[in-house]
Length: 162
Image (cartoon, rainbow, N blue to C red):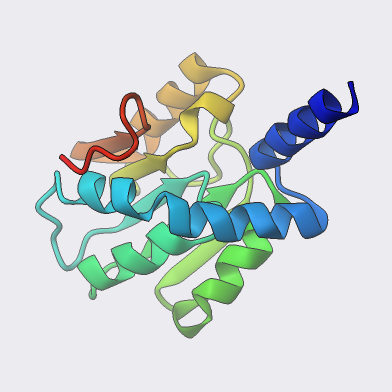
């Protein structure tokens, strides 16, 4: 019974990371999700000046990679977890406040103006969003006309690099 309790606690902490366990989960996510995220990012032809929002930015690894892909653009990250916000800010300290901005918030109430982003990304996170319909309405609102919404979720063999 205790084992089931720990596993449940672990997965709940992955949703909204907290404390020491949360920091360990964030490190693991940054490393473990890297191959799939790299593949997903390769599906777009990134433009140097794109402004991007990463919803559920977690440990900030994707923010770092998008900063490289869009060297003249801005990258915003948002996460419901305070621990994730702190972690992502620390990881992207070099560009924080100039080209990279990380805020605490939720997908269903995005604190950004209409038509703000060329791309909105969601890497391994939409299954944590509470109200998907409301969140998708918010994504549409903040995306520029002809913008891209890149959702990346592992749905099959995690070793598949295609």
